[in-house]
Image (cartoon, rainbow, N blue to C red; front, side, top):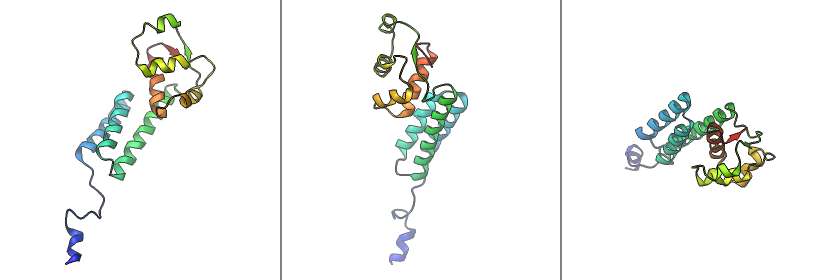
Length: 144
């Protein structure tokens, strides 16, 4: 009868079980946070969310992981109130091997806009822009 359907494995009334792949990706993200590899951490959290987008607990854990990456970037000096300044002239910047996104943001850096203002000029998520400035800071192209 119908009462037995609730116990059938294909019945769509229960939460999906997290996949091993998504759980492993969440663990990789946490490991990246601990080791300071913030780019890998963010990538792992996003892959976990993509792998199990229908599982609310995986999505929530991945979003919490992304927020932890953002907090780690802030602790490392990439605060939304920081005002980036170029460390080299435009001549040198045109010769650098940088991504199109980095180049776009570098053309917006003029010493008067803080990162929060620059976020409004960039369609990327907040943590991606923070990560971009973190990379530029680490490579010595900007000071914050």
